[in-house]
Amino acid sequence: MDKDENFVIEVEHLWKIFSGCVKDIDVTDHSSLARAEEEGAVAAVRDVSFKVKKGKVFVIMGLSGSGKSTLIRCVLRLVEPTAGRIIVSGEEVTSMNKQQLTDFRRRRAAMVFQHYGLLPHRTVWENVSFGLKLRGVSREERREKAQEVIEKVGLVGWENHYPSQLSGGMQQRVGIARALVQDTDVLLMDEPFSGLDPLIRSEMQDELLRLQNEFNKTVIFVTHDLNEALRLGDQMAVMKEGVIVQAGTPQEIVTQPVDEYVERFVQDERRVADILEKEEKYSGIKVVDSGKSKTRKIRAIGIVRGDKVVP
Amino acid sequence: MFPDYFRFHVAPHIDSFVKWMTVAWGPAFDAFSNTVLSMLLRIEDLLLVIPWWLWLTGVMLISWLQTRRVRYPLALGLLLFSIGVFGLWEVSMETLAIIITAVIISLLLGIPLGIAMAESERFSAVLTPVLDAMQTMPSFVYLIPALMLFGLGKVPGVVATVIYSLPPVVRLTNLGIRQVSADVQEAARAFGATRWQMMRDVRLPLAVPSILAGINQTTMMALAMVVIASMIGAGGLGELVLIATNRINVGDGFEAGWAIVVLAIIIDRLTQGLGKRWETPKT
Ligand SMILES: Nc1ncnc2c1ncn2[C@@H]1O[C@H](COP(=O)(O)OP(=O)(O)OP(=O)(O)O)[C@@H](O)[C@H]1O
Ligand SMILES: [Mg+2]
Figure 1 (cartoon, rainbow over the protein chains, first blue to last red):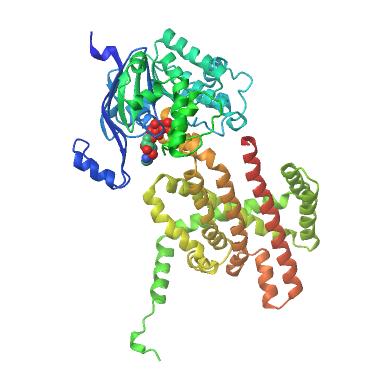
Figure 2 (cartoon, each protein chain N blue to C red):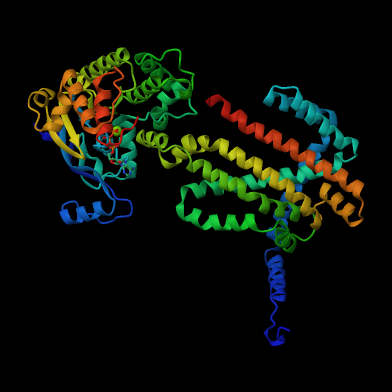
């Protein structure tokens, strides 16, 4: 079988360097890279390669600031990759011109954002149908399709409210609905369920699994929650400082973590608590255990280690 | 004494340049002049056709719709009434017509300029110092080019007013568009919004409160300028103030000045309310 048919998403040697004013960075040249970094450039994604088969969910985990969002943004070229290739359904995204890229974004892939990114001056249903509007779909059809997904995400009755009138979790669901309504083969989800309460969260996970089984969606999914990763992921990668330190099936990663960093992500509740305690003793900083899931605690470790945590 | 042989005058050259311009571009200036004048007169007619009591109830009603209180509409109504009591109704409408004409032209020029500034870094870099200069220059200076190109009368008054009142709406349109959250714009881009769709559906609507603030400021500046523009024959309340000052006629000067303040308050209240109304559905 042709390899292009097999893999829907292929990422090859992808680099993203936020360079500010530093120019002409040759990623293959170590000294050039080191010099750039000295001058303040941040290599958020370093030489990342992975492939996702059709109908599979690829989960990315990693501490805050490890480059997950940057990586997923690169797929839509919302941030322009510095080097490397991205191929989606056999088409090379990294070499598309403006018009091809616009068409690709409208029809081939839809994204759920960590920070929602809803239009504050549009109502829920207008937000949900925004992508359809950009495509030029008629108002009646938009209304109808939006209604369908609004039901799916459980926001019936809120259609005519504005985002600012909704809770964080509800806004997140609007963001999810906005991506689902596009009916694209590829879904890019950046911590889509992190703002939801456990009940709705597991409902949304079920819904995603159902969609993915039924319509064979290919998904890149960023999460901080190991349970979620195990539940949804067919493949999984753990990132650290822009590099994929381990990739494989979630089971592989849980049973054979390659280093201590990965291990920390795959510990059970008990072990995480231990690390937390150790960290507290070590750093002298008291991390308040809010009794929430271990996502919180892993994030908390991030705080102790001095990483940036985006609330 | 400064030596005479260093002496050189630009004045005759400027004069001849302007003369050449008015001859060479005469038809264009005439056409522009006529358009502005007919627009101005039509607006003035419209303002005068509306009977005074309708004005009064109209202003009070709008004010009530905006504030939902009795106090403000009542105060505005009384103020407006006092203009009529002083016998300054027609003259005030004359001034108001110039303001409205100038503001319309300012917005037609200013909003596109502000959008262009937000879209293009280079254009913004060119226009910013120009706007700075326009805002620091004393307002009298604007009378000169208007006078040179259009002579005396209402049209040069409108032109000077437009130049003076243009900067705020340009600036605040630009600022409002640039302040639109990067997250929202990124999301729109991710769903395939083109540059034009981004401007029309995301950036411009979210910049509206800022643009409305710009319109408010532009209107207030137009009012300030229209008084000064009476020096080149724009007429209206400014002319009365000017005459009163020349004759040291304190009482007349006060009445005309009062009418100007009243206009300022009413215009300010109503245009500010516009901005607030727009913001309410979002919060
Ligand atoms: N626009 C930008 N300009 C400069 N640096 C950036 C930019 N965006 C991200 N970075 C940097 O790139 C690195 C990776 O950021 P990224 O947002 O991808 O992390 P993340 O893994 O998604 O973290 P989180 O779990 O908090 O969402 C960080 O060091 C961040 O400071
Ligand atoms: Mg992120």
